[in-house]
Image (cartoon, one colour):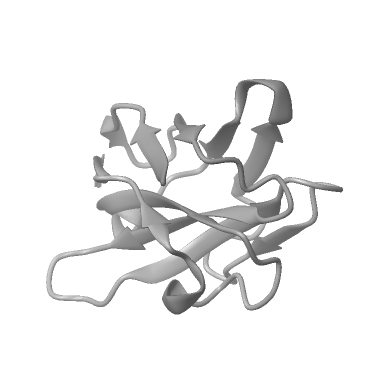
Length: 124
């Protein structure tokens, strides 16, 4: 089993920044990847970004490219999501997820382990 704990989200004004973290513990998936997803009210959960533990290969959804940055600290088994130039439409519950795979990282079904989620609210 893998346990994932996200940092607290928050309320930020449009144009502002926020950094989320996700600490993993338990079974090691060092050959896999971590992803961030989000779910806004009434919408499906969507991929935001992902990163592989090895080599740090990254994936970003088009909607966040150039604004969000995903990074990882292998020693701490922690993944970060730096969110800049936040928009009202970024408001959602953000979830981190873990997988032992490095393929199709934009798909929810790739991930076996999920955090509980953290609320990010961007005021316009």
